[in-house]
Amino acid sequence: MHTHTGAETASAPAFAARGSSHYDIILTLMCVVIVISNIGATKGVVLGPIFGDFSIVTDGGFFLFPLAYILGDVISEVYGFKAARRAIFTGFAVAALAAVSFAVIIALPGFDDDYGQSKQAALELALGPVWQIVLASLLGFVAGQTLNSWVLVRMKEKFRERALIGRLMASTGVGEFADTLIFCAIAAPIIGITDAGSFINYVIFGFVYKTLIEFLFVPVTALVIKAIKKREPSYAASASQQPENVS
Image (tube, rainbow, N blue to C red):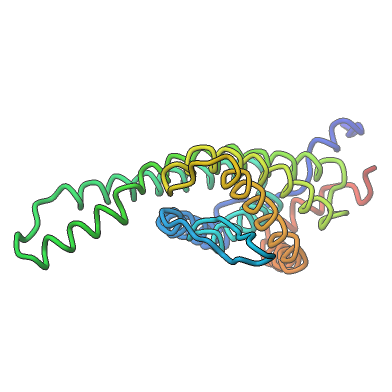
């Protein structure tokens, strides 16, 4: 009879199979969030002044994008790194398709009356920069989500079902920092942020805000993860084969 060594069992935490309706729903929500937040990110936003003359500089997608990371945490924890990687690249493809579609829509000949021309100008102004925002978002998203998922899954190999909240918080901090820095470096000049002070403000607020939102929602994320695990027969089957306590 083959016996499992500590090294073997430590490398095989429990995950559900991704061929389920739960995975499909979460993946669809993530793709929708990415596309909408990319459109919103074309608008520069100033909140304030808050303290004296200090204002917060951000973009129109700031309130929505953290949800993509929350959904990524759920996929990584329940379905594993390969499933998360598939979700990341699916989101990448959907966002790229949206950017190409907007470019085609803008390029198509429209009505030449005043109303048609004003609509064309509005589309060019609102959706024209989307491909650049998408590039910034995709590069940041792929790097950040990959790091987020990798850290979460590697920590799960060590802690198994324990320390879920700590694992979610640690992976969030790593992933959001990489995402925010890459995204802001590319997107800042596109939305009109050109000086160093505003750029630093943009990066710091983006990282702190998105990380804080995810931290605040960690208890909810943990509850959602536990609920999905209970409803995934393949997760229960995988978990039953794992040792109860691995240090």
